[in-house]
Length: 241
Image 1 (cartoon, rainbow, N blue to C red):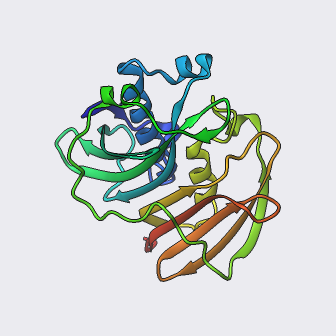
Image 2 (image 1 turned 90 degrees about the vertical axis):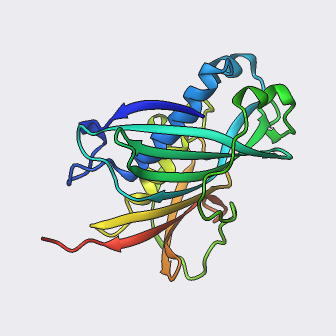
């Protein structure tokens, strides 16, 4: 298991002083990248070498409580399974006292940065991370079915501030932009994300939404309605005081 310690900062909180949902995703993503750094598989070194690398394909995050301004928390991660080009990794966010704030399952795939295609990893590409037992949670398919009756909302153009070292939109940005389309006061209790296409600089992302018994879906597509990412938020509208 790998873990790091963090503290809720003002730049990451909402109107109630709670850590924003996309910041939870970023904290977990950061944990996996710190893990890679510390086992000698730095993303920056892999980029320079144009080597093979891991990319996240899906998230299933359960949020029990969002930490508040100034609160210290720890994020832990560990891989629990390898299958073909995929690696499965758990995350847990806890307080210093041991309260579980959030936990997650994630699927990652190994790909060739030159060709942009998935490749099967060799033992050297994952052995240094180690494998542990999966976290006791409900495990759902990494695939999310695009619902029908989607309603067009609006669009954005991918700019430099959306991008990361892979020269496409960062994973957390999809969640941030999708969450902007939730009803005001919606408390997210579970989030699922499936990434399908990488949005690049200058691409137009169109937002579509629908709500059913599974939750609120925000689907981000290109101009031909090919999904970049599919998100599903489960939760409730908080009562105003």
